[in-house]
Length: 223
Image 1 (spheres, helix red, strand yellow):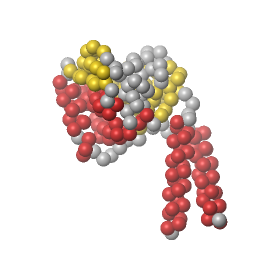
Image 2: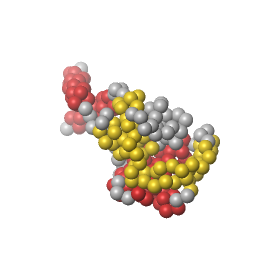
Image 3: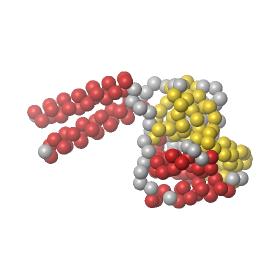
Image 4: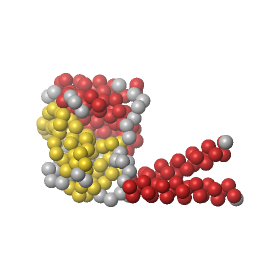
């Protein structure tokens, strides 16, 4: 039994590695930004490696279509503007290495924070302007704090900024994590989204990988 469990664990790790490889090596996707809803406007200022004067920004759920599929997201990139024109050079990537410089990479701690915040607060954010805006501000603040090369200051909407502070303060008590990835482009704004469902091709490759893993384990037992 112990050997079987070890074999199963090894196969599971092998499959996980294959799926991650497929995700990272996937073809580029077309992303269109269609607006922020729900959400509210906040005033944001940045100093440090990224510097800009106070400006009104839409904070909330960034509605995208990814290869034509509606995809809710949050912005993780204060350096690049959202493009009203569809861009074809987006790639999925591990959240910890997103966004692209200079706004990132955020690192594994921030990635885990965002997965916890999403799991705890995203359901309410889909139906409430203030909750959506607060979650976006919390994500922006956490990414900037973990990157450490620029500082964001928010003002102009006390209910939103106060709720964002409360969300960040709750992090030590949160355990559930969403399955998220980065969606990045050198020309467009970078986002965090739910990990996409495997494509038929991806499932086939993973299936073949499972067979290969078990075959290797089988051969290993013969030696």
